Amino acid sequence: MSSAVQKRRPQTAQQFVLEELRRAITTGELRPGDQVRQDALAARFEVSRVPLREALKALEAEGLVVHHIHRGYFVAELSLDDLEEIYRIRELLETEAVRLAVARMPEGTVGALERIQREVERAADAGDVPAMATANRLFHFTLIEACGMPRLVRLIATLWDSTDAYRSLYYADAPHRKLAVREHRAVISALRHGDGAAAVRWLDEHRAHAVAALRAVLERNAD
Image (cartoon, rainbow, N blue to C red; front, side, top):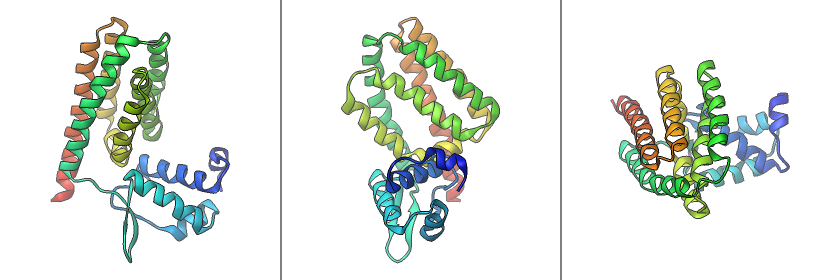
């Protein structure tokens, strides 16, 4: 097993497998529709089938994998309608979260966003899709969590989880990475000026561009 994997390994085998499987899905190593081959993964992670099965059940509850009787587990696929519904609900919830965050704006939030944005841009320039996806999520949730409503944050996180397998498809294209960088900068500028309405508008555009790109991917796959 690689030293990088060893370094990431938390206390329990189930936590370790859950983290590694989620990472494989969110980075695009396992793509929507791919079968999750348990024997190969158990050997790769050096664990028994028991923690692997438990991790897969947890991912099934999150909507990241689906189980087909007699066939096994597969990375979940979304229809175009599913995707658009998820992003529409995100728009509604995140708009409320951002408005509340701007009203509260805990000290240091904008500075934290600027630091995270530097990592987003480093990953974007390097074409490092996994790092970009990780930094992008941290950017958004640093702002969302500033709303001070943990239940709202958890609802939004569940929606993000359900589309994680598709996020790497979006960031795989350099123009999409550059666009995301520009939109993040615009959000930070709006927040720096206390303009919550502008921040919401830029975030709406940010989501809309992702939906349009992923719509094209799903339509191609349906042909």
